[in-house]
Image 1 (cartoon, helix red, strand yellow):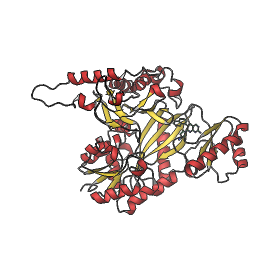
Image 2: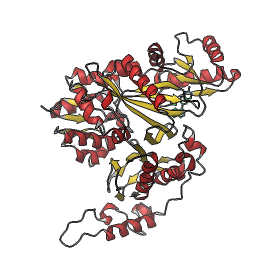
Image 3: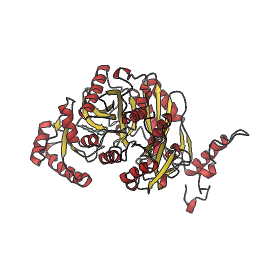
Image 4: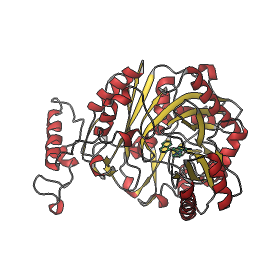
Length: 503
Ligand code: MV4
């Protein structure tokens, strides 16, 4: 019997396409939801049916709990997969889905709630024996107590708002004299952003690595880890390159970190797929950072080395099935990398770069996977995350995986919007990257060497697109595999853009 009758995917872009593919492989019909600007989006075509849930603004569509639950009810779906981002870690959403008599493909609301607060999460982990960064997570939040605790921790200290995710509102303080004003600024910001001002203090680790453990728990007490991922290559808290295994871990450290991930998940009463984030300091010690109560963007590298389908496992767990594998079956083979392709302009401070995708040639080759939320003709808007696609490579070892990634990036062509493709190639070529010398300041530190070559002018892009499409004319009797370039260009014509503007 199939796990569910029908699954609604409460997301868009590459992850909605990814979830739809596992639904299809399991013989479960899928329902897409879409906003007005996503009517023709790839994820809508990837699903068996689709429901409009609102206008472009995410708060009135992909973040609208009532609209999403109503769409599930209307289409007869009996489960909802939230993907990542949007409502995926929203406790009220998980509760609303359950209250509607539907299965939420993720942990229950209570788990999201308890892990959505750094203070509570730190206390729970410390109690469970999971190492946390030396710091303070007490209830006494008076200025005097926090200042005294900071002094006891030792400088530099990092002030973290208990409710802030993804580095929001954090402040590093180098010396005692700067603490009071930094604390006041943090409180004002946290009050405005989250309506709460509890702070956690931690020793500021210098050039740490970000290593996370993938965990998997069923509803019957079964709980395993699926090894780790290293995600140190990021910029402004946006991950760019991820890999597994981490080049920084010895086998015994790896086992300790992954077992700490399992202990963290057990303490949180975790169910479904989750990620326990750690910081790894320069001496190899690791500390709990936070727990992500969802499927992660970078899950494909784990799939590449374990041979598992994480979305399928999530669905089976949500249907009440026991884990179909034990810890001894979770073996990593070889090495996998993921590069995130973003519609952002490295020549313009990485700002989002909306527009129409005129041409997309995906990478090919052995050990290459391409998870894309867009195709030629797709419109990239400013309304959502600028992630376009992920290039994933597998190799017998890190060197082979890097070689395949470098080749895959070289074999990727995406025209019409500015992307970080050149930056990804530069990171892969960086000697420190090749040596595995990664840390969370890597991109900023090497930014000068990672600077992009300038974008070609629009006329050159259009000419290249036309040339590519001419070169791909089908043999007589075969239908064209790609859309007509003049159609994909919309109203743009050489020397006469719409309203005189370039495309
Ligand atoms: C830290 C840290 C150094 N020391 N905590 C950033 C996001 C938030 N989840 C936690 N973050 C950090 N916490 C201590 N005690 C450095 C960071 C950090 C970081 C962490 C993971 C990935 C990328 C990062 C980039 C900058 C800072």
